[in-house]
Amino acid sequence: MLHRSTLVSLCVLCGLLGVAPSALSQVYVPHTVAPSTKELQQTGIALLREALQLAQFQQYDPALARTKLATQLLPNSEEAWALLGGLYLSTEQLDPGIQSLEKSLALNPKNAGVNFSLGSAYFRKGNYPAAVRALETGLKVKPDVPEALFDLGNT
Image (cartoon, rainbow, N blue to C red; front, side, top):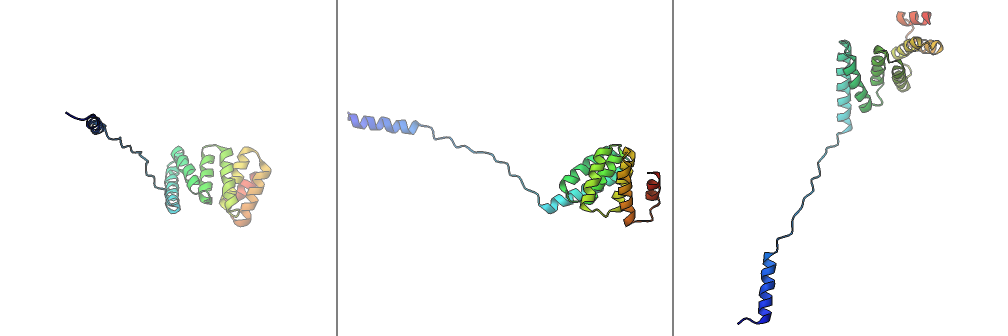
């Protein structure tokens, strides 16, 4: 006959053997790779090239989308802001076009082409004093541009 303590020990042992092991859990944490600054710049430049090609075929909406993204990737690129401004002007969106051209000029105030575009945009909006200032600023850098002289004469 089994002693009572042996019986209890046997019951405890059987009970321990019957206990399920604790569940193992895992957490899935996605691995994200942070792109380098150089990769972001290369992507921005590629987007600008695509936008230029699209603009040449007058596909302004996809060109605008790519250029907007490029200005986010290349916020200090005067070329990106100038292209965005030009695309806005091509789609008769004068206010965002002027804002984009002004951002480009803030990065390089001596860009004659941007000054000429800005002068044209101000002229189209009826802001003639601002148009004259922009055109004259551009003509100080490049004095022999017939289109700019014509726009200044009209203004």
